[in-house]
Amino acid sequence: MNIVILDDYQDAVRKLHCASRLDPYSAKVYTNTVKGLGQLSVRLKDADIIVLVRERTQITRQLVEKLPRLKLIAQTGKIGSHIDVAACTERGVAVAEGVGSPVAPAELTWALIMAAMRRLPQYISNLKHGAWQQSGLRAASMPPNFGIGTVLRGKTLGIWGYGRIGQLVAGYGRAFGMNVRVWGREASRVQALSDGLQVATTREEFFSQCDVVSLHLRLNDETRNIITLEDLSAMKPTSLIVNTSRAELIQPDALIAALNRGRPGMAAVDVFESEPILQGHALLRLENCICTPHIGYVEQDSYELYFGAAFDNVVNYIRGTPTNIVNPGALQVRR
Image (tube, rainbow, N blue to C red):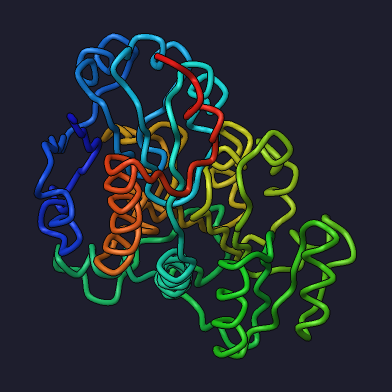
């Protein structure tokens, strides 16, 4: 069977220990990304099995209909809205779900919080250009001494979404002496209270009183565009918002507008509406925004975990014992 692995930006997959599981089979790895139905259908026309790197490629109904040989999609990590599972089922394409871990994205979230609050990217960049102890953050909209940065102890950390990642980030906050406040669904608030954390009484209070707001929500129809310009504008001019979850949680252009107005004062972003982003992206041009290229799960241990599980699903399918299939009805469709 022809196996295609898409969007391996750093050409890392072939160097993983778990990659040896596919040695007996024909596997093609693509290190660049193509967009659009035409380009994708050409690239995948001979694929029997596709291995997806998270949500980097959208599997739409139109694409599935152009891939008559396709039998299995093996997902690294959990299934999301980027795969039209119903279309796959109708066409007899099985979709195998992988495993996930909250550790890497939680650690990146904390790294971004610390880097942003101490203005590390700005200090480092200016030092390389000969400027000593200069962050360069001096816009008229910024509070006095905003560019110096601040410690975390005694500040309030707001977490919207108290799932596995949010719980880890809350633990980091407590370890650093922060007051942790949670907002989200009732189940999240109940769990937070049982863990000894504070819960915001209103959404308005959450945004207006937190010094750091970190988003940890799944993207679905309910949460898409859930955060508005009004929410962001209620934040302190000294505050920070961090998004390592999904860009679409925030209304289009709301974050850019809010940062330009100085509320919140800073943002740290690991996710974008269309990826990879272009060099001239508006967020990249803002001095009060730290951007990373969606690396929340991109590190050695997570890759071994994610790809190892996906490759096990591939091998099991080829051997006739499919595992972790989210649409078992696809296995009954005659092709």
